[in-house]
Each structure stands twice: as C-alpha cells, then as structure tokens.
Image 1 (cartoon, rainbow, N blue to C red):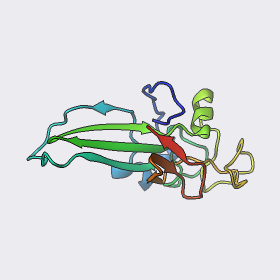
Image 2 (cartoon, one colour; image 1 turned 90 degrees about the vertical axis):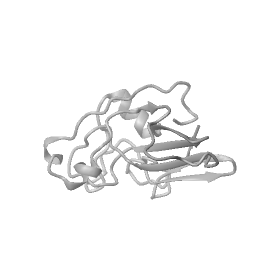
Image 3 (cartoon, rainbow, N blue to C red; image 1 turned 180 degrees about the vertical axis):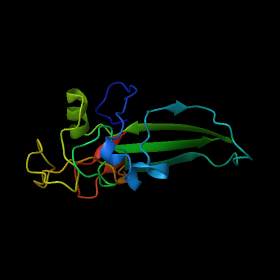
Length: 162
C-alpha cells in the first residue's frame, strides 16, 4: 500500500511462536490479521447515508513474522485498514506498510529484529534516530500536504500511502 511498490500482492503471515500463544496481545481482538484482502460492495446491515462519501483509515501493529523473545503489543508491522464509503456502499481493504524493515524481513522469510522487550544490539539496523529498533510505521496514519502518511510512535520514517 506504499507508493514505493509497483504492485500490491497478498502477503502471507506466519503464525505466532508457541511462547506467544498465551500472550493476551496475540489473542482475541488483538490476534494478528493473517491476510491482505480487498472486499468490494460489502453487505450492510441497515443503511449508509448516500451523502456519506469518504475514507476511514486505521493503522496498527500486525506482526508478519514471530520475533525471538517476549512479545510487546507494539511489535507488529504496520497494517492500514481502509473502509471507503460512497453513495450508500462500503468497501474494505487492508495492506501492510512496506517499510524498509518489512521488505528486508520479507526477503529473508523470517523476523530479523527482536521485539521491543528484548535487547536490540544485534538487530540489523534501526531507525533514523540511531535506535536499533524496527521502524514499523504501525502507530499513526495522518493526512499531510495532500498525502496519507503512516508513521511510527518513535518518529520513524514516514511512509506515503496510495
């Protein structure tokens, strides 16, 4: 969903590691979303006003690969969920934010960074502030100067979305 990608493809996610199975932040409403999907013309219970036209965006952590060590609820890769309303209809789509770290882990096929609760000294690289913590663009989604931008709570690199 970033402007840096030419094509969007489904990105499979690996499941949580056994030690994460009991973590409350990997269960129930906090469970990771496994797939990137596009759902057009959603079934609506009731009615959507025909003059409600626009886009609702939500960004949050959704780790694709289980990392070594203890899990923290902010460890996940950024995933933006979008609901588009137009003329009484709604559609939905979600995509991972293709950060530099996300692309590196995708190429490797496994987690390269430890979680936030672990020592980051052996992580491959960090963010623009010199921290060796994965910049996941998983916290905010804002509209700035005509662009929708995903950012990270430790002021990582902003990623423009299409």
